[in-house]
Image: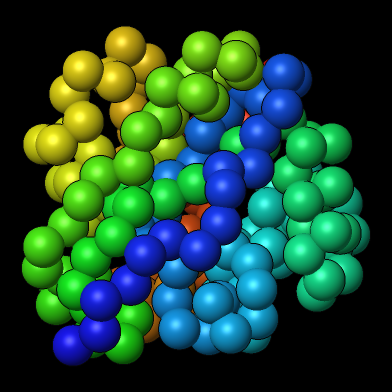
Length: 165
């Protein structure tokens, strides 16, 4: 079990319409220096597909530019926790991030939580920050592919388009 402190700031600007919250960056994402950077994670190909755009290059700046150009804010629910590998089920001693800077400075229409644990932590431990619709999305993690093959994942994630238009 490792104690992890979230390594990055939230990605958003004053045009961000939606906020996507994961739980905590995986070891592979931390190693690669940016959100959802495991090579088998469907996050970037899925967003590109939904938005009818090319997937951004793998460098953090290209991904950040992609998010901001498309009015998408990204952060994680947890500021720190004890976790084994990338297993959300192993999380202990979780401390929640503050979302006020994002919600006060961006015109967020909806908050999306990716995965059951992110949803659980957000709904149970950040209730004072929930003046926005909080919508569960299935995780894009490769560990979730058995439950959500790509077509089912894409269908579930299409709801973000309603809040981006």
